[in-house]
Image (cartoon, rainbow, N blue to C red; front, side, top):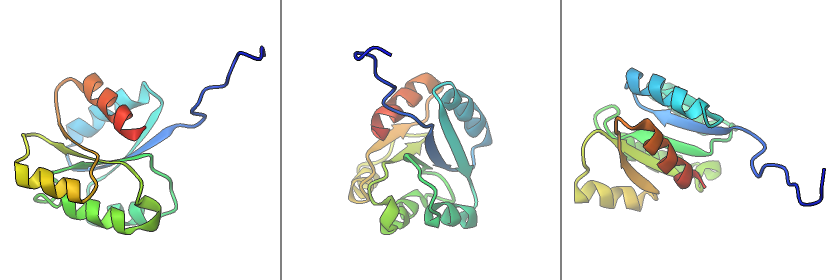
Length: 134
């Protein structure tokens, strides 16, 4: 190895925790992320999400579908922030429709790094999430 050669900055797979129940989105998103060496851990029931959040497993990014369980996404962001090991984990709020100003303000209070529309162009969405994770 020459001195100027450096190993990649990231030596392990990024782990993304997705909370939502859109199975078509999960399948397509998992495939799009795998092309970039991201692992998607998805959960839709409240109990498994709580277990994920309270575990010692490292997640590089949390992605919450705003419409999950009747708009409980922001409550989940608040719960994640209450966990010591999750305080600095980037959280992104996904939505099928534009969010109103009040919801955006509440998301900002919960330190959500970005609110993103679910779009048909998954490669654009993945690129935006990579930026949010860094």
